[in-house]
Amino acid sequence: MLISQQLRSHDLVRFRTSHFGLAAVAGLQMELDAVSIAGLMLVRCNRAEWETAERGYVFKDWHSSYYDANPVFIYHPYEGPVPAPEVMPALDSLGRDGTRLVTACRLFKQGHLLDPQYTARFLVSDGMRERAVGPYRTEYLAMPIDGMTWPLEESEVDDLAPIYRSLEVLGEAPGMESFSALLDAFNLAHTRGVSTLFRLHVLFTVHEMLFDGFASAAQLSTNPYDRALAAVRLTAPELVDDELEALYTRRTRGLRNAIVHHEPAGAHVDVEFATSRLRYVASLGIRLLMRMHHLSADPRFTSVARSLGWRKLGARERLNACLDRAVKGDVAPFEQVMSFQ
Image 1: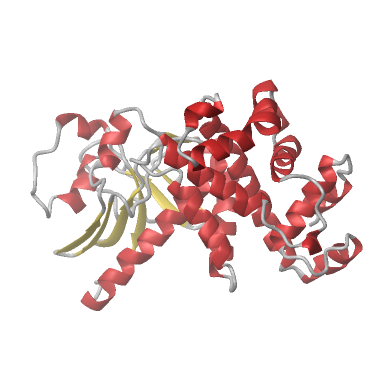
Image 2 (image 1 turned 180 degrees about the vertical axis):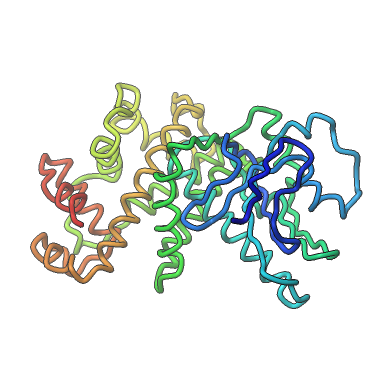
């Protein structure tokens, strides 16, 4: 075990090794002391544990309320001392794991999170303490105190793990640069300090990367907003209400043009409402695209793709061909894709 069984709330450092890395996931909160997400260890640190990393840098007096934060860290143990040439690669690896975890959380449900690249990562090895800090250095302590959180329930761990694992597999696959760019844009739309209008502009870009810009080979006869709405109807029908219908059928195109031309007032749409709904739709669309990427890489799916006329189409085109037919009332291809094992 990585963590001692002797759990105490404040003054016991439970790490079994003196060589470890910590990456702060600002906003993430959980009741459990430690969980594993597809092999990635998350630890809810007490004061003594996060000060183990922080006390090497006496740069300020902590605000007293920070001690109630119970921040969550990615925890990576090392078997022995970390050589100096491997310190920065280890910190970079913690950052990549953190970005992947935060992306998975955002795809799973909405909430307040900050990537460890924006907060702090620490590497402790005996007497050596190294850190990599971002512009929101102490937010992993401040956000929980301010109520800006993303709660991870015990029942959600098994649901979050496949999303994380899928992102890990796709991130290591060749030829996935456009998918990585899509995830970068999706995460940018959640970044702290980004204005609502720019956030909305980025979300429209994400929507175009998901549902627009196809060659004639895809043979699509519906518009991108109808396909986006179909994705919600098929995967999360409980989210479809009159306001979402009105947004996607009558107002989205006008709102996009208004945002692009910096005249949002002319669209007569609540931009906060539009931003929250576009986030939901983007997360659903990305998860569907992830599934289509995995299926497209599976040789067993070749015969299914051929039967649907998708043999020469990429994953994004296949997803939109599926949604195009669903808009016109034919959900059989979607059901075939979702039921494929």
